[in-house]
Image (cartoon, rainbow, N blue to C red; front, side):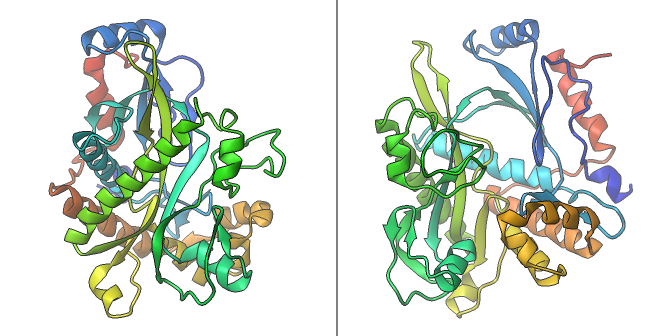
Length: 367
């Protein structure tokens, strides 16, 4: 089978009966179910009747610097990437639930690339936690002489890739937040705790106290993932979590984890043995990002948000070697199997057909 058939990149046109428009993100598509299908499935799955259900399909597309990339031969996805990321996320969600941290939005997993999910009201904060100074934080620290991150002042004299004395929370905006002085009306703006506290309702929090709860869930989740990765020889460097609210049977809002969590797409892993020898070896999407930085004609286009129009054009025209996608595929699969302790299934036929057949028992496939 050709690689193109193994890597699914178009996920917004599946024959899933739904209401409204399909939400099509950088790597995922979400189909919110019709009222009739929603009620029927809620009854059969013993879910609260007011829960709003949807089908979330992850693709094999790879997004970096907020753009999608393709290879020299036209391959637009990393084979097996979606299944690997879903397996890792679901593993962490399950562990968090078992440890009593918080629940999540997954109702069922009909296919390795598909989740049946409950709609949550998203908190408009990218919950970012950093245990090491690297990446964009290091660039700001070294080149721009920035010392305050997330409202916390860092000392002078830190070294690249150094472990921080404390887990640092450096949130940014999720989506565009309007009407708050000092916060530009654009996506992914760095913010601090006080700004969130002063405007908690605009950021989607139900109470000011919930800000402390999200920080607690972020910190405890980071620690749990870090312990597991340490056991398999990885350093958990930094990550991004997303949170939202669903409602209990009493109608009370309950904060949950959502989207993906602790994956090599949303986190940075390093090889532990190499790091202890003084070498930083990336084992996450950061390796792909660094390859782009080192090989595109003008890396500044990737690093400065104000050059986004140029970046979009670059992503359309720049072709990555096929080997890079295949190496990324191998890395993600290996990580997923090490973390979960289970093999990641490989489709033996067209992935699209597999997804459709997996959803037929739910009665939501048209035709």
